[in-house]
Amino acid sequence: MRIRRATRTAIVVAALVASGTIPVGPAGAGPSSVGSWSPQVPLGIIGIHAALLPSGKVLFYELPGSTLARARVFDPKTNTSTPVDPTLDWSVFCSGMSFMADGRLFATGGEPPRSKTAPVGTGIENAAFFDPVTGTWTGAASMAYPRWYPSNVQMPDGTTLVMGGEATPTGANKMIGPMESYDPARDRWTTLPSSANRTGLYPRAMLLPSGRVFVAGPQAVTRRFDPATNRWQNVDSMTVGARKAGGVVRLPGSTTVLTSGGKPGSKPVTATTETIDLTATTPQWRYTDPMNHARMHHNLVLLPDGSVLAVGGGTEGNFGAPVKIAERYDPETGLWTDMGAQAGQRTYHSTALLLPDGRVISAGSNSKKPEQTTVEFFSPPYLYRGTRPVVSSVPSAVAHGQRFTVEGSGIKVTAPADAAIAPVGSYMLFLLNADGVPSIAPIVHVG
Image: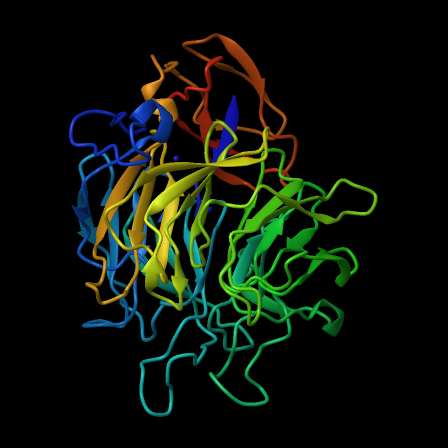
């Protein structure tokens, strides 16, 4: 059994492994080897930001247009979307994202209304909640610093750390160094001591089972933050160097991190892949098998069987030379394998995430060739390898460390031990059979 967080993270829909799929991949390979992509489905907006909601639906929002931001809740069960445009005085485009314990999405920073005095890259102090039950946006207390491209990390104690981003697109005070902590119980922000400062545009930040926070790019030097001391420790430098627009994902167990692709400085876009084991006495980045296709601005999605799917990206700037072939990384063999090719261009401003039915939804990219206002679904090979196990019933909520029964299989399982392993919130629970075929995942609230 594997449990996946219902987030970007950041959760039951019917299995859709039926007619209408398009198995496109290496010559002669069938869906049981390379999976298949669905036809494109209209979304109505560019799916630049994406978050899986506790309902199993997906929240998408995009850049300013006729409103300060356009948003949709998309139902992958019916392929329909509902407008949920923010009624705010600012744009949540380019914000950080995370989930609160109660299932609300927390968006930090973004953009003011664009003008000559507020060009692209201008940050704001604002923060907002999206309530998936009511479909509405409400403002939260403002941060101390304006941020465009910040990152959020939900912490074990229920607070949210926000780091990085920029205040203005140019100038000496462009990058924001101070880190802030949001307390939802008091709707209050606290600026951490200067020892906690960390800069970067969308730092690749993640919570570790130790309760510390690890940042794996885009800079070459990777670091670990201890919230007990408010200090950072250098861990190791990625072998290839900095990875602009590279992908990062935690592997099963959450103590090994994989990074791939991106643009290392002035060098060409790379296919290289590295992993780091953070339980080692001296953690070091080590090359593993490179992807078959160099790419940047791609998305890495952890699948129920523990493998990783690379989706989209390109090799020339933000939108040039799109890579439409997906790839699957097997952490047991350390090898990448080509999967099917999608129809849409999914380069800069694209998104991809795992759904409870085991498919991956792919969206976004404002390339204007044309702008991608559709979604498409990838059905991995495991959906073509026999009967799926069935989870007939599980508790809707469990406490950390609680033993409970997965009905349909009669298996007794134990929820994650504490909030450092699984912050309080909603999670997908997948049951896998001996062939690696996953069940449809019910949603369980943990904590």
